[in-house]
Length: 87
Image 1 (cartoon, helix red, strand yellow):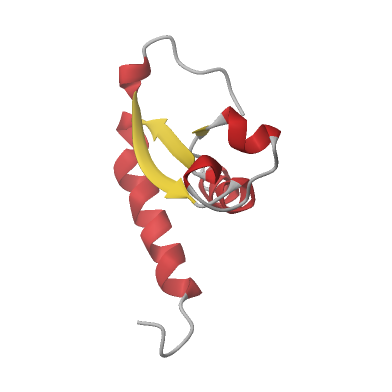
Image 2: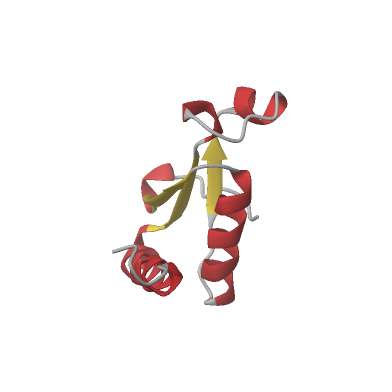
């Protein structure tokens, strides 16, 4: 992960993951497509190893200028991940 920009207004929330593992997978997808990602979540959840519930939630933020592309990639990934009959 990279240093957070000094002006946090430069970042947009593009997704929320249900845990660190899911967040890292989504981060990898975005980084592979040239988009820097900052993860943020409840430190209490990480400290005690929670993997479900609100304390396990991890937010993915990207530069506002890349938010549209990031959302498009995440939507494509979600569509590709559906098992027939899930929709």
